[in-house]
Amino acid sequence: MLAPHLPLPAPVPLGRGAPSDGYPWCWTVTPWLPGDVSALEPGLDEVQVADELARFITALHAVDPAGGPASELRGVPLVRRDSEVRAAIAADRGRWDPEATSAVWESALAACSSAAPSVWTHGDLHPANLLIVDGRLTAVIDFGLAGVGDPAVDVLAAWTVLSARTRDRFRSALRVDEATWARARGRALDFGLMCVANTRPDSLVGRIGRRTIDQVLADQRPGPPAGTPTIPAPPAA
Image (cartoon, rainbow, N blue to C red; front, side):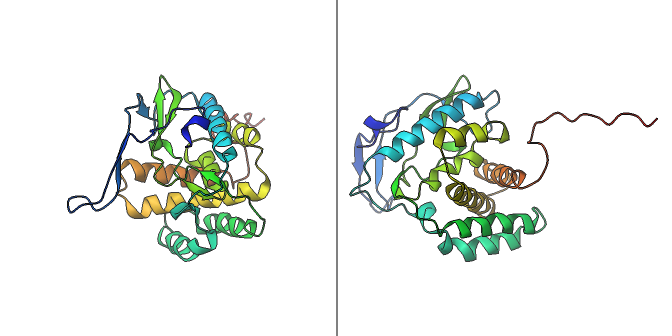
């Protein structure tokens, strides 16, 4: 239903399997899509990725949401994630500044008072679910968390995938307002913290989680964006 509306290939199911004793969940057979996952991919064309990802999200959010299932897990109201996020912040006190992470979370909760439209969301936009060929985004995979909910669920890609170099470009292309941006940053923080809490530090998801938190907190610090050349001070006279 969604694939014809999307500007990038998606893994349209060819067949569906039922739960059994060997595997107690539903499962699907999908076409093979070429490419490598973009996670930590060297030589990534981040401008192209930002532009294509914005086009993908815009098209997905424009699909009529009537009759769609509610977005679960990442799409639940942020207030329902409050205790888990605060516990994760406390547990990671030695790794990230708890005041900075708490400020991001408080800002996200405050933005929940703004009414958000319900739209179709992918629900899991991070570097392990984007396919890359020659540094360019060519497909989006893993629609297992797709559903109808807050558009901020997908805007979190600004921190899970992108850096300060292209984040404003991505935001402008999506025309994201302040409240949605704050909620998306909170959802990115939640995603990063849960990745770190539930995976090994050297795992792919663990590395994605740490990078996401670093990107979220970099947005909170004053000063030039990451990657800006440092100009040395002139020698003293």
